[in-house]
Image (tube, rainbow, N blue to C red; front, side, top):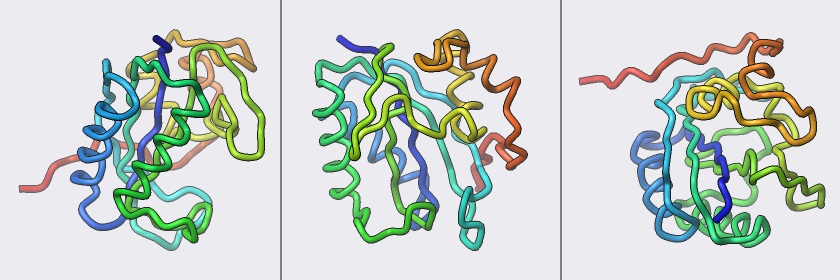
Length: 164
């Protein structure tokens, strides 16, 4: 079993429903969800003319290789309606990123582990530090909490508030 951290985000349709559906499908097809951060409302990153996101980080135990896990996340995204033509930073009903996979590193055209920009994004670092503050980034060899302390990202990341 490999301990893996996944970042989830949504900013279209029913965001919370999409994250819940993704979490259920990940638990079935990727591995057992063993920890989940709170949900966070976050400002868009990269392309700012869009709705705010709701983000979350999950920790799963998986028997899948990094490549097979990536394939599984892509299939789940497609099942939930994500279109390939969505722009890199544009609106999306679901996004699932592999942040960390044990201490492994991968740098291919289709798969980069650890996630290439996770250390620059508080919408990843804050929920990741919530559930795994002492996890070590395999490239920088420092803890997630240390990366968060050094982060220069000023984007708003606040706990999500459910509306009645």
